[in-house]
Length: 417
Image (cartoon, rainbow, N blue to C red; front, side, top):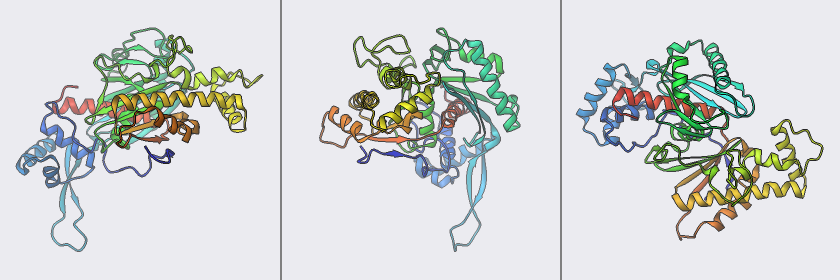
């Protein structure tokens, strides 16, 4: 773990290229696709560098990059020679950014966000709209998405018809393969076929996944996970989520709905969770759980604005209100329990804590660190590092754009997702 266990910023991370810097476990992935993804990850690279990085013969790299150039996915560019050297400029390779465009959407509790990205993964435009609170009917949720995409089209000047795929992240239990939302705090009812409904509505391929998986993809494509084969992301916002990367690939579980850390049980017959069950970790850590208890401390305070109420509760705690502080202390202990369980079961190299609640230091305090360390079995070896990342709302949508880019790449270059 980090000794200081303080909040870190994603700034200063690699900015050249997008996507995993390490080769994915291929599972039959064609070499042509591995080469393309290496070019996108590096931003700009040479045939010789790829030959060394992928341990592939120069002749194979030359033949396969020629194929990618013929497909209009990669182009040759002149790069600078070394300072003071003579001769012709070196020839590099980079992704043809305008080969495809994708949209990434995060359906959120407080706001919906969206980005348009080019085929290199660079963001071209973004948009955000406030979300209606609570569960919505499917049609009401689709209308909010309609409005969001309308905003994005106006900002970018690009019609939806110019987009090759849409990635969508939404809270809840999502079957990625079928695009069915088994349950979500955003959509009323069960087993809603969000993928097929959106594809019919927008005449575009749509790929749906749990929103925490989208933040995990964002770390894998744009953040601290780019050069790491295995790591875990824990999010704390209106709910508690978890995503995991194994072998540079997103892990979803057998049915695509695993890693629901927020709904692991920490107390028999405990507090009521928004999923309808009792004793879930989320029911003690998520913002709605804290707001639920705030009424016992903030007497006579307007409770119609949960964000404001949580901010007031935190202000009371920092000003010395013992009852308010006890609410946050309990949440911190339960979070430590959840993180310790993750570390004990999975033994990851890195655990990233992220989300809107990172503005409150009880989530990464020295006391929380001490609780985690006390709960994890001492193996005599270095424990998992824990980092806290203060990403903004738009990064979730950018992770959803990576989901769409992955799907297009698999379709074009041979791997079936």
